[in-house]
Amino acid sequence: MNPQDPPFRRVLADFASDPAAMAGLVLLAAILVAAIAAPLISPQNPYDLSQLDVVDGRLPPGARNAAGQTFWLGTDDQGRDMLSAILYGLRISLTVGVASTVVALALGLALGLTAAYVGGRTETVIMRIADIQLSFPAILIALILLAVLGQGTAKIIVALVTVQWAYYARTVRGAALVEKRKEYVEAARGLALSPSRIVFRHILPNCLPPVIVVATVQVAAAIALEATLSFLGLGLPITEPSLGLLIANGYQYLLSGKYWISFFPGVALVLAIVSINLVGDFLRDALNPHFRR
Amino acid sequence: MLVYVIRRSIQAIFVLLVMSLLVFVGVYAIGNPVDILINPQADQLERERAIQALGLDRPIWLQYAAFLSGALHGDLGRSFVHGTSALRLILERMPATLELALAAMLIAVLLGIPLGLLAGLRPTSIAGRSIMAGSILGFSLPTFWVGLMLIMVFSVMLGWLPSNGRGPTTELLGVPVSFLSLEGWRHLVMPATNLALFKLALLIRLTRAGTREAMTQDYVRFARAKGLSDIRVIGVHVLRNILVPIVTVIGLELGSVIAFAIVTESVFAWPGMGKLLIDSINLLDRPVIVAYLLVIVALFILINLVVDVLYLALDPRVRLAEAKG
Image (cartoon, rainbow over all chains, first blue to last red; front, side, top):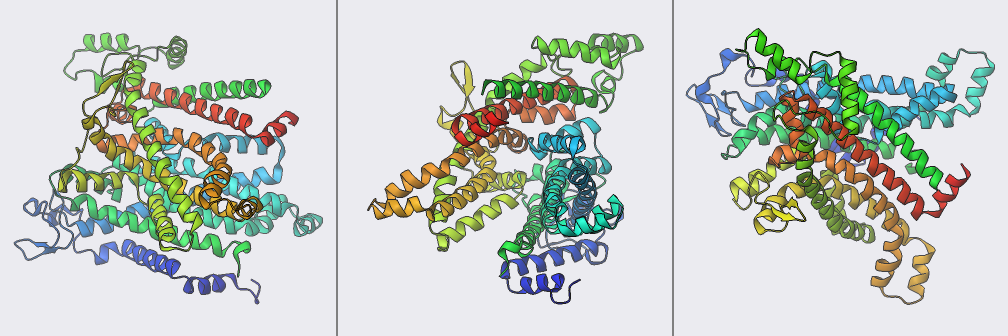
């Protein structure tokens, strides 16, 4: 790292000067802590059936049951505390979103860098597949895949990875094509370094800023897509109650005015997506040399 | 030009073929429809007869060959559940989806372009900032949840609008439509608004960016120097220049609206082909799934082809580049 220009400290200092980004970052940090610490901070374990009582079912927010327990966000049809269910659901939604993004990122980087560095027919084939795929909306591709693969946590991650890899491949290829022509790559070639060393140790680090921006926004997109698929009944199984499944579960009670079973998980979902997007928007400007003050 | 159109068409047919193969082979992995479609109390003989009637006992490649030759004759198999032609089932549902998609696109265009213009002309005003903040929300809010909230507010709390279905339809040239009756409008407005939100946000951003760029151009300054009124400068000079990319995006997004209608139709129980798809996936009604996917892929390829060709016709720069390449 260049001592005159430590990028991480610089980005942090920029965060402090942008209130919207700062709010997003604080919110995101709070959501992450809440999701990770869910078993410690939630009032009950929502999936331990011995802690649930059907008598407490569908209580409105703020209601107390006979045992003096207060349900701040109400309960669902099985008497489950919604606050606890949301904290656990957030955990599942974030895990699926982050896991699929990491896998898609690795796959997209490998394919995009290969395309840029090897060129020729390999490049044409990889980028052609990416082009065709990107001409269809993500939700349609994910639906086709889930219709084909069936349900399950691993399958939804496969679907999310398939949907996302092309964005990374395209982004990193664009950046790598520019980097490839620079002198330091020439110098590395002159030293007879292996192609994989040149690609991963020299070119890749210089291509990362745009990729980081795309990855941030894609985590939010992956979380939203997972929630949508789970809502449609094609995403996660009932044993992995993500926010989307919680919302779907509350759908049938919405029409009888019991809004909280769908409303609060949705608020949690929106807060997670908006906070990630705010941070992503900020990173896009901060990491773009054209916008540097 | 003709060479380009032919080349693009051949490519489109190739993509369609590959997709049909992928979809068909893939859908076989869902599960065994025999277990779901045939009465569990049926005896062995009845089961075998049913399997034979549905053609499930033949090798996969033979089933695909039969399917492909059927597809060329407009026959995409029979629905296991409804017992009727899968293609007809989808075509029956298509007008509902197209009506919803077009209504959504219309809302997005009629609101998005004026709001984007306003935000682009006065980027620092309160109105400009609120419009942009709204468009960020439009991108971030998950469509299905917004749909639920619309139902909660307008159907459950206020009781103004019906929460599901299409309402009574009126025949227009033999096609059932909702928008000709007041009751139909009441059913249409909420799902269409829900589906429009994402595209509305997109169009606002696109129009705003285009307007901001156009306002700094020499031709705008020149038009002003000539003493033209603001309305004329913006309405004629600016709008005409920013409209070319916007029209392209509208064309391309039409397909995506039809795809996203799957979600909206499920939330509002709108009887379109998207809801049919979700129902069919849950019932493992394979012929309908395969037929839907092929119809939507064909629709997409067609839309992309038309937009590409239109773009070629509209923009002389692209035309020249294609002629050389």
